[in-house]
Length: 154
Image (cartoon, rainbow, N blue to C red; front, side, top):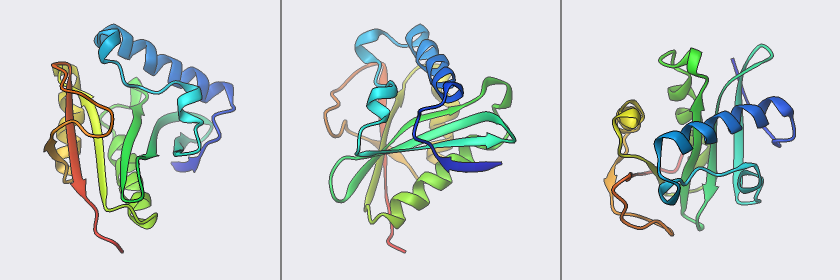
């Protein structure tokens, strides 16, 4: 498997992300949906990575700069048929390493509070994230939980 910076111009990643947004719309009320669309992921403050196994897109994740010391994990997704195969852990480890390399001191994220998101919350906890108050532009929301972790400069 390879993790590559992706400019989000290919139809394969567009379809992969559309499936992600469609699933989030089914699970999360519109007012609580925080997943970025293609335009949001193409913003200059976002770095987006695709995980490929051969020619197939099997996962993705992004890092959004919030300020000089704080960044956010965005758009973590594993292909449904590849869940529980270590792809999400691989992507998250990569994002943590890249955020550290870029000089960020804190990494935060928003994820769902529904049972569907329990495996994601467990993965984040395993990688040192703890629950926190809403950050950046987020507000208290019964459908969201917020997690954060400090980063140690390399």
